[in-house]
Image 1: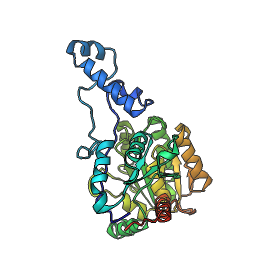
Image 2: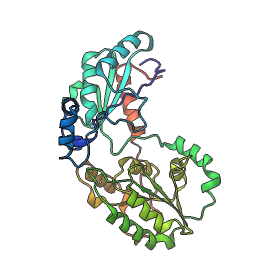
Image 3: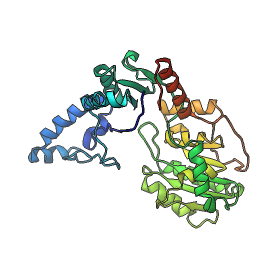
Image 4: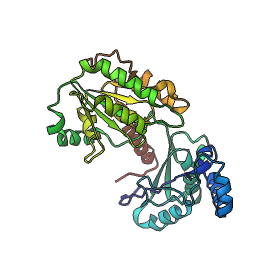
Length: 337
């Protein structure tokens, strides 16, 4: 691979709204086709009124695809193929990295249409013909950018605010329910009770919510801890302290729904306690089992002494994947530079 001076990140987003939440079992191409048919049918105002009367939520006329990605182009296999062919002579082979089952048809199509111009890497097993990809990479957790270099920078940037805090500094990251890890206010009440139980062994506690955190959950946490002298609750204002928390925390307490937050915390080698694994299924359960076998996480029960320290080999999937990619490219006589 010659110098890679350009990076593009096309997105793949399923249709949303109305009955789409029940159509995620479909292959994405078929899901989009069904969505287009429904939108065409529902463009009839009279029929739309009758149809929406049978639904708990209205079916939007236009697809909602905000999520902060409005400026990112929707993935198009043929457009990607045209781009890599046009740039091949000047910039060399293009590396295409895809992750998630919805990316499988796009990535395999790109390789099929331009096998001499691309090197296609599929993250996680596609459950599909492996010969349609140049490399399939299996990871224990989510790939992320919170590596040692990023955390060193964050440690410097957040030194004045976080270094003086009483130890141990415990960071609590609260996500939100998903299809495969569904929970409600009951889990938040359990977390509140457990945090009260361990607060005596904490020096400082900093709590962060995610965009998926239900309002009822965040309101409950705020009522319980907003005036507690040991607790600080991040309100979503900039700058985001997430990397600073990773760098300075002595221990983490994280809800089970977020593979990315758990993967980042486990890359530090510091104690990670998990809340709500009993609500998870499918790949989420497999993920939690893997982390527990590695000694990276323990269930949060509320009986812990948060000053106790334990460690494990950090989860470094991104480093391992990068090394594997370089190795395979080198075997083919290519280098990344």
